[in-house]
Amino acid sequence: MSGRLAGKRVVITGAGQGIGRAAAVACAAEGAVVTAVDLNAEQLDSLATQSKISETLVIDVQNAVDIAALSERLPPQDGLFNCVGFVHDGTILDCDPAAFDHSFSLNVRSMYLMTRAFLPGMMEKAKTGNSPSIVNMASMASSIKGFPRRFVYGATKAAVIGMTKAIAADYVASGIRCNAVCPGTVDTPSLRARISAASDPAAAEAAFIARQPMGRLATVDDIAPQIVFLLSDESKFVTGQAILVDGGVTI
Image 1 (cartoon, helix red, strand yellow):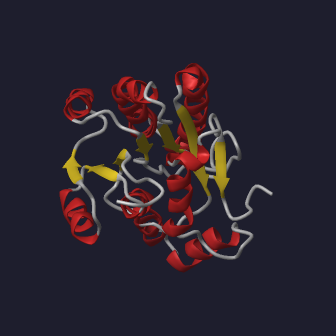
Image 2: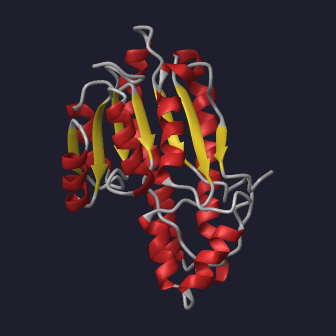
């Protein structure tokens, strides 16, 4: 198969909807052998019928045993996109210890577990002259910029950026690349759920749009090409970067 990712094997978490789903579709279209992972079986079934996804698997990326079993079953991968995540709405006073732990478990620990499991195989791939790539989903709401009511979300995404840079520094000489993507406000099912839950959904949507200088929300198709680029050999001299795709918010 031809394409920018032809012959590459890629695992994508959070692939059932939103950016993860768009990335899975885009990577498959570019020739990658995609293993799409999510907890939602119905969304994965829909994805499998929509696109040429090689395999869809219902897996809890917070479960180290399941992740280890997956990495042992699959051949060494060329790419890993850690996309799964959760947006907690609130300040530090709205975030109790259980909410804090949940956000860090899903947004940070899952990336640690996935990367730790798949990295050894990727290092073996690198010995053959390939350029394996890890891409982590961060956000402009992170160490880059603070946003109201994004206390623990911003903290987790800042941690993702730090983790990304550390992995990049540790394994650059081993031929492994690791980068983070930091989107602006993206029109996803997750965002729509938060808008619908607001006391005034119309005002909430207008506020999200107002903070985007381009005057619109990003679409998942604004973000997916960046994922393809970072997983492809086109970016083989790029590592340790937190790449903003934010529509000008941080100008």
